[in-house]
Image 1 (cartoon, rainbow, N blue to C red):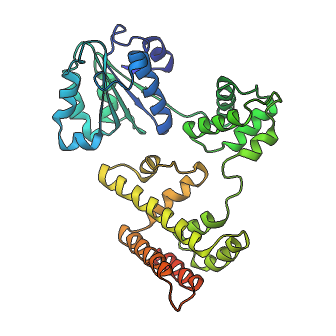
Image 2 (cartoon, helix red, strand yellow; image 1 turned 90 degrees about the vertical axis):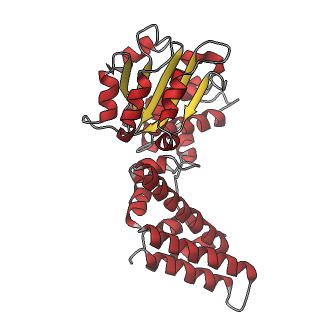
Length: 346
């Protein structure tokens, strides 16, 4: 069946008594689907959400190699009895047949939770859960603008922080423009911690001072320019980074870190057949939301072989700088950065 948020809210406390044995949470915000999964786990298992005898997490990648794995887990009983939950994250239409088989084998005390990214109206996976007698599909869409600022303000209050005025909520909405639900909640946690033990109100100035990425500069700016193939920007950005007290070695490590994350996102997208945007959601630590669109464009624009060649050149420069030699470190690293940026255009 197709579930609304209110319908799921009424069934969540005991979904099996409400006629459900499985639920699909899907939507563009991975943090939001993960939160829904966590809330469902807690509602069904209580304090036993980490009990390995009552919870089994099946990886989509493992399921592609061993299709029977999900059905086996759904048919199993909890050791010692009681409720049991099986979870499957990042499901795709390609797994619909495997999931369909598992739905018919779910044990009486077991519940299946599946999460997925954005699904179209023609999605086989979505239709499977909407059409199954004892399963439901719930689409989750992130709040935006003022609504996202209100959610963050409510989370700050829930964590013991102060109430947020209308002006402060507006500042929250502005600071979180383009943020995912999970990123907004993390920022709310930071603000609540900042105000811990402080009886004064939360102000727009507090929000601005702690806003993520309030000033994108230095090594990160340089890494972004390299990934966009802007070789002409390298000298100016290196000089600016040095003026801030940064060293060439730090700039090089930032570039290696950024290029490694781009290649990791490409690899996940290739391996699991998902969009690069979804693959970026898997990276840890999470990609800062304000640069996520640019990083997605970079990952799509770089041929994998060229990106690997750039990484190899940067790694060789790092090794050479550690060994020392006749060429000054600054010159060695600057040349490596320029060559990496140039590979983007090939």
